[in-house]
Length: 320
Image (cartoon, rainbow, N blue to C red; front, side, top):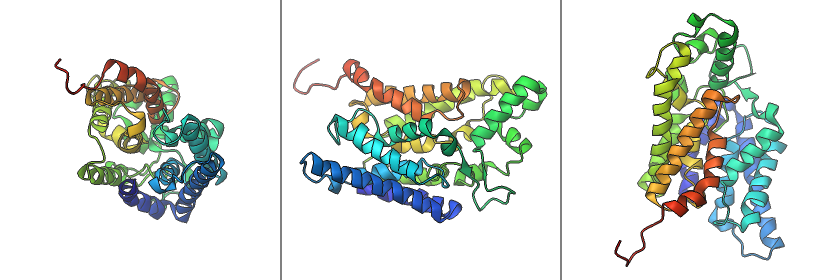
């Protein structure tokens, strides 16, 4: 767990840099709430102290990463308490939970305080006449809906980046790559999240199957189908835009790869990743939400026992 925290430092530092001290406060509240909840439950149930495994701290950091910088401070606290007390401890603690606690905490507060969870801060590194606004994904989704329903089809040509330009969003692919955009404070920089994932891969902590299957399947579906709605036809989707915006990189590299809530076998993990990619595409493309990562991962967490039932590990000592 210590190396997971180390790998998250670059993305966290970037979030503090572009969103200010408030980002540090949000993550701090989430971590403190998670640690206190874990400690109190250890005492209440007479369990050995489990704080040393650092799992509560990792959960708190990931919950903080999924929050807008200007969110009311009680919300990350509630998310952490729900994640630890309900999702993790009600099933027996670390190793017994069937759902990713941080992801579940994020979804719980999203549906409880949706307006707060979708009120994002414009990075101070962008020169704009606003302090808050929509993420690139939300901007594209809203523009796409308005143009599809009431605008000329020709206005859709060009894809997501052209819609961003029409809406006055001062973005470029470089801005999206480094994370100079509105969004949750820890998800915006794909570059630094990938850097963190490389650290975990080198340390043999991160398995490659789920991120590769997740990102690869999602990218293929976007490339194949997403361009149709812009008049670009099949195989004309803007893959780069969709990979660099929203919570895809954070979800694929850090949330979907939780060892406790993913399949046991390599083929099972590939199936899990493919399912996450498919569901994320379906929700982003056809759902009312601009994002679909959280729901996709939680749904696939639910299917893990079924995947493990049909894709069983090899039994050593038995000839097949």
